Image (cartoon, rainbow, N blue to C red):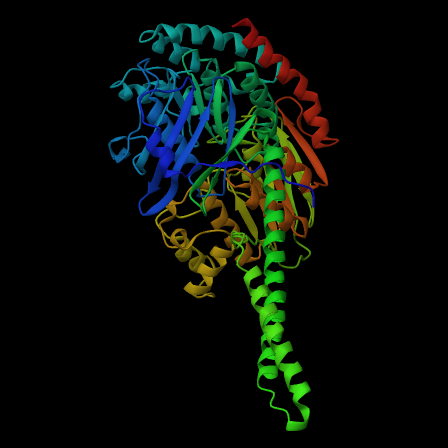
Length: 610
């Protein structure tokens, strides 16, 4: 096989930890020195060392539950909250239990630091606008007041505390005026809608835009930044990150997004509790990692085969030697007896030489992660298996959304993808289809023989007070034992600890896996997928795509993940717009091509102006 590139560095040396004493940072915007992290009794990292210089963009990758979000929070703790003071270190044995933002992890050794004036952490949970808008420590009680204001008013309030916020407000107004026409940001009505009433995607987009525009944020720590964003916003975000020149460490499930923005990769190896650093793009890193694993596996298997072959030959020679040395013969056969004994001695020497050749260092057996297995076998389709929207006016609480009435029919076996801008009502279409929300006008019908599986963005259908095992048993109506329910959850990627912990303690990826296990157990024949790749790692997304490839039921999907949409191979793709309603488009790629140039021009124009 072709020679693999040099393996990425693994930072686990204790002697290196002793030599690198905290205090004198080497001009890097961000440095990890011998960092050890744990959550409870679970060890996440041991002796991790890595660095990022100014303007470097790092993709932080790893399996669900490996500690990516925890590491981002630890970095945010180490670099400070952005109040303009010198960066502080996260020292050994410091528990973050005193911090309201990250009360669950412990730093056992090492330190985090760098030359960046501040770090801004953008998490998956509801954003804290006070942290972004530079409200001073102790002003957190104003968070509720901020949620009742539009973005521009919140920036005016922040300008009372920090001069930097005034500059930020001007940059935001310029961005909005350009984006309204270029990418349809006007749908979100940022000028009048309070922060607390924005859709998840619109709020996330505004938060990311302000984070990128904020002059004092030296390092941005982005945890799944593309979650909830529409496709045009994802394209704008990747161009805006490149144009900003900031140091960025990002966690994302979107491989195309990581390829577009990252020039370095850090991977958390959860089996070794190590951090692997590589100066390459994400695609090159994945290729090198796969090639290295294949070569390690081939070398290990070749060595094991050679050892078995040589051992068998040496054993045969020793057996032959033993028979020859015991050969007695007769008085008239002394030459034959001497010959056999002489050959037995030579055989013994050969066997000893062969066994000596086996004293080479043994290659390490490749560690294989437990494979994830998702199987979706729907119930058979009958006559009444259609989903229909007939001139439906979408809305909540009697207030109609600003889209025309929608008509749509989906029959058994159909695959439908829906794209569109944030806040236009894509999730509302799915909720109306599944009859979670009644239309303000018109009729929504679901066939009586359909068994729906609804994967929402926030996983609201999961009871937070139960464990996944208890939920699975209840979902199946007692038809499966607690043991079998646990095995099904483990096959879908949950650990034994996650199977028996309250659902409220599961990370978003764990909750998504629990939902998929429930779909498999119930044999649903219609899947409603709202951003299904959100929160799932690369392996889980790949396995989900594989399962959907042979799934014969109905699939209705809203997603911003370009690779996922292409792999879904939808029979029909619709774009939801404020004025045209639901209209069919030629393909996902045609939709992307229409918006990519506008997104790039917008990002470059705004940052060039600044």
